[in-house]
Image 1 (cartoon, rainbow, N blue to C red):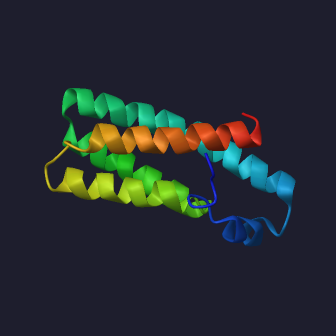
Image 2 (image 1 turned 180 degrees about the horizontal axis):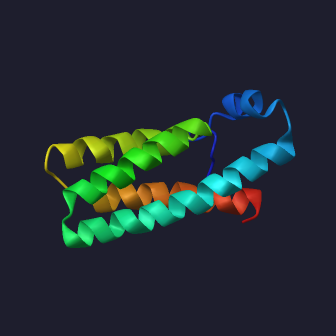
Length: 111
């Protein structure tokens, strides 16, 4: 999977001061955290727990924005918005898309 549409590499370079090792560390930490929250989001779908879904989506939206993972940020914002409107219909698809990006990112950085 080509990650350029999902990661703002320029933002990440600016954030890290051009330190590639630090960028990898940031992304690795993000991927590990995101996988945990995506698992919790899946559990929220199973329980039909809108409040938990909103919390998980909000966390994912913020943490992805912090590292320039704008593809995940956009999907998480959509998930949060739909949960606020009382719907989890698209949640499995959105979670799956975010998981695919995280998996590809993890493979690229060697997690």
